[in-house]
Amino acid sequence: MSDTYFPIQDNSINGYHETKKHTDFLFPYNVYPCTIPDDFPSVPLHWQDTMEIIYIKKGRGTAQADLSVFEVQAGDIILAPPGHLHGLRHLHGFRMEYENIIFDMTFLGSGVIDLCSQKYLIPLLRNELHLPLRITPADACYDKLSACLDNADMLCGLRPVGYELEVKADMMKLFSILLRMAAPAEQEHPLPANIDRLKSILHFIEENYQRPLTVEEAADVCGYSASHFMRWFRQVTGTSFIRYLNRFRLEKAFLELKHTDKTVLEISQETGFDNLSNFNRLFKKQFLMTPRELRAAPFPSS
Image 1 (cartoon, helix red, strand yellow):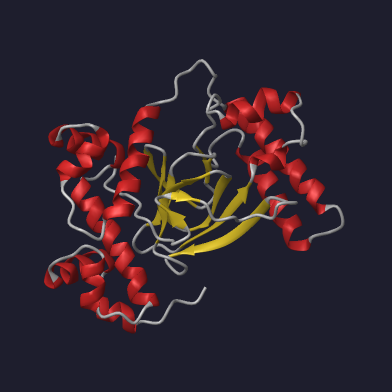
Image 2 (cartoon, rainbow, N blue to C red; image 1 turned 120 degrees about the vertical axis):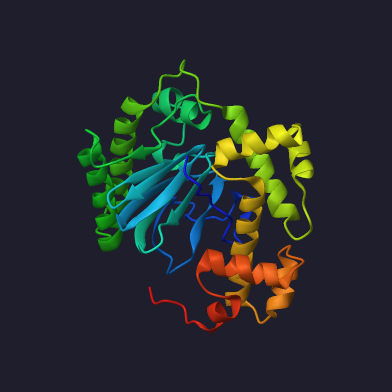
């Protein structure tokens, strides 16, 4: 596993559980074109109660889906069913464009408990069906899946009469293909307890990053000894707890520098750093510029 990880970025995500509403109640489907790092430095490691599909259009990056970390490039499709952890980061030197497709699972239903809901949607929401985390152009089903996404995107742009029906049909066709690729219900999903523990740690970091934190405190959240916790955290995230925590704090500081008039010293202290020199050194190592240089730089155009 690579030493890549996904700090939180967006204030709409609380404790890594995103609760922001992205869709309309009557037509719970939306598409967001995004660019990293132009729009934001990274997509946070988080989970939500809706379905999310990340469709890479240009560039390269690194994604995390639950406990798996992998490189992605143009054409790749990442699936994040409700409740599953996921995050996204560009690789240095690469500008990455992607579509973020978000919809409520009720979008695929008929409003009643019918056969399709019983056989497919309810088991999927209960984590009894396990979809593939990533589809690449090398996969046999890729052309059919990408055609569904491309057609839905075109329809949402043009909005001809009846486009909602065809978008829904595209998503139902997409899921019928994905369900044929799903792991059997009797096949055990890898390490669900580890995912729950990781969610607890992510929430703990979000709630406490502004004060001094120790490995022992974090280990207590999981009921582990400090030594076992450090081994476990590296296993499931690909990095150490301290490095993850520092990266998380730096991402928070990045947003404060861009969106507030607070001094660099105030921001460093509010994001958990008790030494300004150390903060400046770590910040420059992470973002290849000092905090003052970042603040002076204009936002890149979309």
